Length: 447
Ligand code: UGA
Image (cartoon, protein in one colour):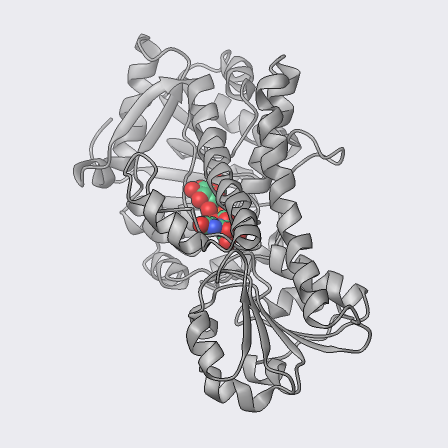
């Protein structure tokens, strides 16, 4: 392919797709984003970000302004594109197991006539969505009769809160192809390399593997990260029993670079749209493929994780002497992690809802997630600021480690509450300085 900008489409403009589209425009391509949600497309086309993500509004607005980036609901607008990225959601199926692939199938149905009209010109379809192993080869078979059309499975590893930076500077690019040594792969790899040229020139490593490996890389990475978190959370429980401190244990084991310091923060566990879903997806796919026993431990990883929410709730109940009814509880944080308004499978929101369900007078604060929370749970009382939430509280729970919550001043906060008791569900506060300010400060696995 000729060097220089390409005409690229991104199909599915949810979180992943919208970030991907704007990032590709940022590195010079002409990008068209397609989605069936006309409201979302309207907002994006006007340069308005439909979700909270640091740095995204800027690249979106710039792309739209400079004419590099456009959005549409009409698949016909994609006919001239050389490369199509599939960035559709693959939600957990209703039965709780496996992934629902209907959005990918529908996108391929819409795209197919336009792929046909390319009349043999090299055209690339790139899967970004997380799918059960075996899906890409099935899609490749479906596309095989279309001359000139190639499929690469190119999983995405971006983290919410760092999405634009992670897209433009990933740790690695993984290309899954039918046969890494086949002639067909060379054409596909060259086209996708042309899309990623600035990243490759900046030294981002790129691996070409088969479809199944690419699919497994994605779910293995997320399941491994989940395993690290549940491992340290299990150790945290033992720390509470024995008097050890989990942050000391994590720091010391993390200095062994075979283990590494990251994803060893103990607390109320992982949430979000990816780790829990990918873990369950891998368990279910492994089961379908006959590897039930070898993946039983991942069920434990999931169970340990959800158990952390119950663990925090027990601490909260104990801190209120078992009587929750009508007691004012400040909950700081609803998002599944800081720098996002995403509350999918959020441990923080789950705990807040359960306290509310048990009769506590909850005041939930979050710097970004409240509009969504209010829409979905109108009866859950919220507070616009941490200060409002703290006022009159008999118990404070820090459940999402937003920078502004980490920076709370225990002396000033002490004046607002009616009883100075705080539970740090994320292991981020200096408990000593809170105790010095007159608080009963409790951590999970910490002294
Ligand atoms: C995760 C992966 O980190 C990304 O690489 C991947 O691309 C993404 O899923 C995806 O599949 O799309 P993300 O869900 O944005 O990214 O969030 P993480 O930063 O991984 O955090 C996940 C959860 O783990 C959060 O609830 C966080 O609070 C929790 N966590 C993280 C801990 O409890 N302890 C830690 O030490 C680290």
